[in-house]
Image (cartoon, rainbow, N blue to C red; front, side, top):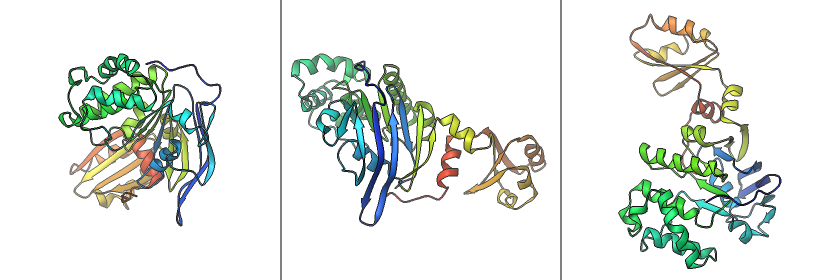
Length: 313
């Protein structure tokens, strides 16, 4: 399932994309590139423009401005030739419930003009990759959620794509199923595949992504490797405090020991360059519970996009 020869320059490039629906600008002057063998993650709150961006990349939605090129070809002019080199796993389950796992792969391969014999040769390896060899004759309704997602991933690989577009591929999965999916995606990256990934899971983004785009209100508000973004935007230490009286600390003297203080629910977050003075002061208040940890991608996400919950767009 290795990739074909690389295209000089970026494998995929979006330049100054914009998309409007009525008076609302959903994607606003967005540019990014994906290199061969790279996983580019797109994160942002609900309504940030992630799914609309994916739809434009697939040619399912025409940009109001800007351009998309892939593999040296232009979208939408060369959309069929581009799609022949793409693999897609969407948020929704699009497996055919009337076909077995093997038949789902066979039928999907025919959409790419592949001959039945050629597809059948690939099916055993694809099912093995998805850990579904024993489920070849089972229908999707007999599979767990994790199995369905792995079958969707195997189906997306039937045409041996150079670039995978994955729109929140592990949403709704339990931790074990998510970890198995991550393992499979890591294997694809090691084989040289490229991935464009949207996700709400910050641990997923930190594990898989070479670079991240942070979107909010359709605009790119940050870009870089997960670790570089954390170092650029955050203090290194975080102390979480909760328990009786925790919220009283927000306007108290301890705030002077932190560079920044935030509240989410019943928890107070102290962001600091040096946690020791703060931890020493908190040790005199045994009714409080504390957690000292390094800053992570979730802290970055919340700092850049806010802690307020947004409804689905």
